[in-house]
Length: 382
Length: 99
Image 1 (cartoon, each protein chain N blue to C red):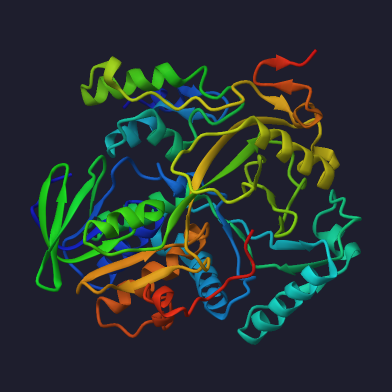
Image 2: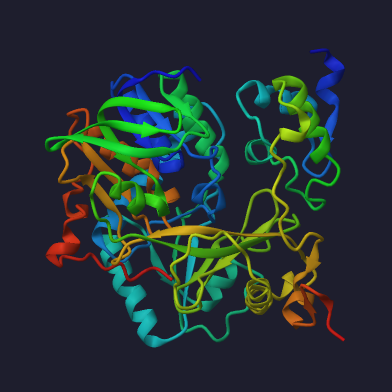
């Protein structure tokens, strides 16, 4: 891709958040949008994620973002002209104590007030949704039929190819090494391929965003947290049509349209980590959970096991908006949910930068909320 | 591109053709992992045993990057497909089957 040393907007980070932001900026009329990716498309968290999409959240902001993202995902193949592998089998959330079920019910109340048609379901209904499910020890279930997942690779490539057609430049193997500031405003970025003057710089670097922010002297409270995940050989459909998820049970499991079953668990102790290494303990423990919930999976083989980083914030909610340095923006801290929120987050940030009225007011996601002590604690995460 | 090339299957697990691989090298993919992500080549039960070297050779041929400098694909555990019930039993470890 042709190198230019001047850009209107430079986006640091070429994962799904950077790609969607670039696409919408170009669609809303910004010219010369450049995306910098230190490795290759989907080489970071995006390509390693479980790619679930849900609106069953516990804070108003995440509910609003979640349902707006679903609205976008449902029409995305038509808009971008490429497949995204969308599969809406719903999320079946499982509670193992009365207290946990109460929290899920509070979530349902909040969600329904915002137009999300989630509901509680009985064990019998849960078995209709997922016939192979053995959850006799569960206390209650909630379900939202429009939840599901999309293919993170296909979705990223679909957005990227559409963005390139609108003039976006994507530089792979190009790392941001510095952010230049004059007075109180950003002026550009230094990279491993040279300097680029820019009017606007956006930090979309996921688990590395605190490192990138620091290049401009901004402190972010984010940290990378390693999560492991595995996938089985493809088997006949119907083994696990919905995403099975439990916050206390600490798992998510779903069968992809392709036939493989993908499943993950959060690490104990939530360690800070930049490694993408894997552990034998994970596939042992994950296989036990899988066999218990879905006994029919016992004879199914695991083909691949890997890890990726969650870009965590202290409250589990994202950081979106301008910083103390003018024209330097963040879109980070998605805390394991960047893929599902990227379409709406990219769109709304692009609206802010093109004087279009934003679909959602994101001001509460300003990073200064941590200093003010105004945290937006999200309960519906593992 | 002749008609017959479209039917040459490179990745048998995922049924990916030579034609598809060449199209994406043309669009800028220069590593095995990029092609894997966009096409699923090497993601099936054999984990790239059959197709990996063919793909590297094709990248080298089209981009001019010497084959020993083309970025190889990531090898991921458990290397060979293993039944979940065996993993769950705790009787296998990275060192093999526990006696």
